[in-house]
Image (cartoon, rainbow, N blue to C red; front, top):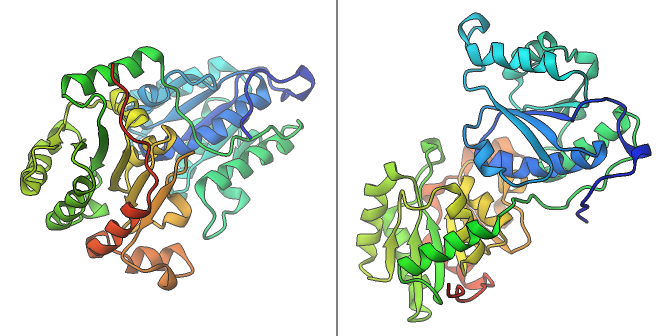
Length: 362
């Protein structure tokens, strides 16, 4: 159950400053991190500060009452003397004083440098809670692991365990929602059943689902009802690939929109859309946080650990049928491939997916 508002003074952690969370990860990682940010903010009675390498963190987390100052360190692997952002981080840490501090870093090779930076800024290892030291189950979902980290933080800092939100969340203002409605209206999509399709990822190691299968799936989406529309989202650099998929579908109800949906507008449109389909990537986590039902195609990442979580249904599709899913994520990474997902599996998942219906008119 999600909790809101300040906590009584007697349940607050004894440190004077706001909680500090360090997480270098993808957009999707930060969406799921909101479970920990919410819990620690509740524990301390004030928003958390965040150190990250994700340039879009402030945009993504805008409006959340559990997030305070965000410091972006782009070059954490560079030598300290050649990295002004690292030196600025250390100066900022020294100025902010002691506080509850948590490090969430699954890459073991990255942790020593982060510990060193934190210690140089006045956060010694003895006062740092490292999430990975808790031990993560092989198939433990990230959200569950972060909730357990929050409970461990409460014990570590001598405070009652905070109520933990069951699901990640993002905040969307009314002006942003109206911007989403206005964009839909400008594209002639007001009052229609809109499906957001996100077929690409900037992480090329995730693989690609073949164009002919996207064509087959999107024709299935459009075939159910004449008023249906498909909007292809993506960054501007993906415009050519997305336009090629849209052209291959050969249906005027498919609208390529690469570069037209910056992150906050994308969130707004997802909050209004009938449904979404996409490959495992940051936008699928945004969709989940916006309560949008969706079909997500998974390649090397094990969905039992990282699938988007939200209030709406998520249909996971993999190359391997559930009866053949391996018992550990390492084997999954080796044997499951995005490009091997059959069209039939994605179509069946789409048919099972409950949807929200037409978007409202402006």
